[in-house]
Amino acid sequence: MSTETVHAEWVRDEVFLLKDHFDFPLVMTQPQGVNGADLLPLSLIGCAGWDVIAILKKQRQQVTCLEVSAESQRDEAPPWRFRRILIHYRLRGRNLVTERVKRAIDLAETKYCSVYATLRDAVEIQSEFEIVNE
Image (cartoon, rainbow, N blue to C red; front, side, top):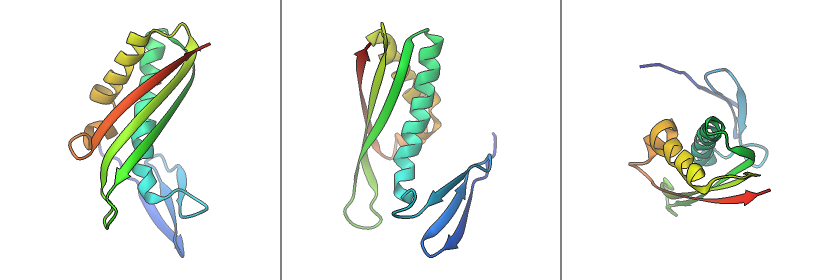
């Protein structure tokens, strides 16, 4: 089992400096930085998108653009728990094969994305995709 350490440092007022396990910085504040709660769906779509692209490259699919968005539903009262996240993948490329794209997304979400694996028992996660052939 590997161990990774991330850091959060309070800078001032409502500003935190976050650093990943490679020491890459990210500012968490509003309105000049990332909202802390947004980091959860951002982590999910970043992880899944990374894996989808890696799989599609191995499949020799000619992807020119991947955009991934997440629509979250949360409780209206504290602690504003996430209840549902809908992931939308929008792929552009040449001669993209629908079944290969579907398979890449399925593998990313069920086998490779650690964030998805962690959240899937706690939050309802659904996904959809669209292909724009160039």
